[in-house]
Image (cartoon, rainbow, N blue to C red):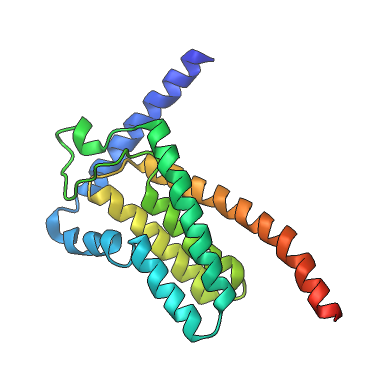
Length: 191
């Protein structure tokens, strides 16, 4: 089993390098866009602030509060997960990786990937009929992940791990929401 794991990890590492080099081969032309995706709209504090204000303006107070709560819980959880894995950033391991950005925290999993999945995923779960949210949210999640690769601060496997953690958190939050809120909502309707 140990030999299989080593072969698997070696294959993942090679694939990480190939994809990372391909994304970075775009050259400096995408730097401003990638920076905006990571530190502008893809920055989870900015994303939360914009969404909460928008939700409050359309009187969706409950969803606004939920986004604040799940963002805070996810942020704290990922802080400990990143510390546990303590993975290096690509630019610290490989001098061929161009560091368009620098981060001090461990790289695994990508916090931007986790948070974009949780925040935008929650919005989609709460508005399942909205094709705009589904397609727009999915595109933004993918572009934020791609920007993290381009900036040289994550390997593809770290971004994918972030998305998977985000999906796990969404599953947990949605399960809790269904168990706690649905019975309460039914009780309110009976009155």
